[in-house]
Amino acid sequence: MNNEENGMGKGLLIGFLTGAAVGSIIALLFAPKSGKELREDIKNKSQDFMEDAETYLANAKDKASQLINEGKKNQKN
Image (cartoon, rainbow, N blue to C red; front, side, top):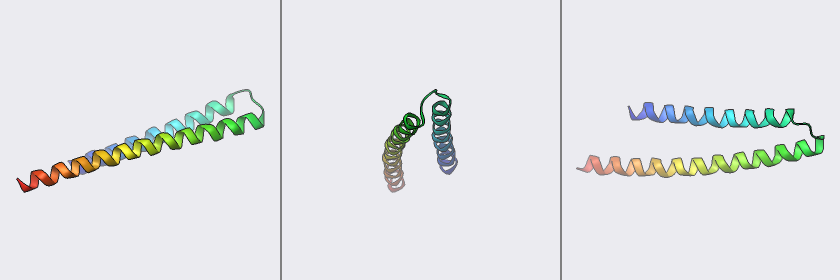
């Protein structure tokens, strides 16, 4: 069951991140801006996206570590 939850969580994360990236790019492409402004916006959005993804992954790693430690404690008991 735990492996199923991990797989579902990974799938949800990948879907969310992919959707956010595609939505941001589409919004930028349909905005009436010059090429230079558009490239700058894409650069900024991609940096924001990467920062958000890094934060989410750091939180997920912390949560995974907590769950592993709890599981180890439960096995000892």
